[in-house]
Amino acid sequence: MTEKDYEKFREGLAGIYGFYDKEINMFVLDIWWNALKPFDTPAIIQAFNRHVINTESGKWLPKPADIIRMLRGSTQDSALMAWAKVDKALRHKGTYVDVVFDDPLIHRVLHDMGGWIALGQKNEDEWPFVAREFENRYRGFRERSELPDYPPVLTGIANAHNASKGLKLQPYVMIGNEEECERVINGGTVKPLIGFKQAGESAGDLKLAFSSNRDDKKKA
Image 1 (tube, rainbow, N blue to C red):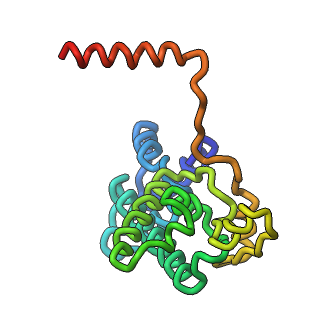
Image 2: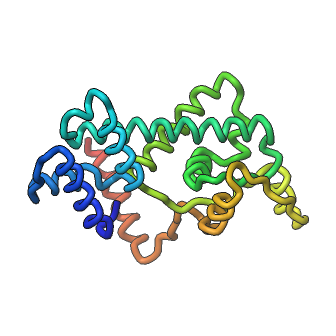
């Protein structure tokens, strides 16, 4: 959540407390806000709804830990579903073609793992470890409610070759909901996702630091 969600969050939490015939004060509200701020508003609402209708836990007013437990469970579910989509796309379409998923986080995670082509170079023995790495990275972004920069299209073998030769690019394949895929394309960026900067005026200081560090090692 962001600061603009605060008022809606406050009203919603007051409603939950009222449901349990309780009143909320600013101290408790701040605890709730700081605890749940890293998560998405829709996921928080869903977690509260799940708590309220639970025949056991729903009898009592939830604590932040109860809702966070549900939220982390939901991010795990999302990661598993995202990986299932990736796995199916790879097995049915392969890495020869460009692909666009209907989830931008899939694009960023696969980019950070080396890209669509690199994924297809993994063997079956490596696959469980690849799946675990994907799920952990995906969950990390979801738990932080983070949508980082991502490539609009995941490049396959054919267009990687065509681009290098100046040839016409082949059309990409959409994976999942087409409207969401279009949003992913429009929201992506072609700029490098990790920036590099040439050392300029600080080069002398950097050299001095390395020299000083080397002298310290000699003395040791």
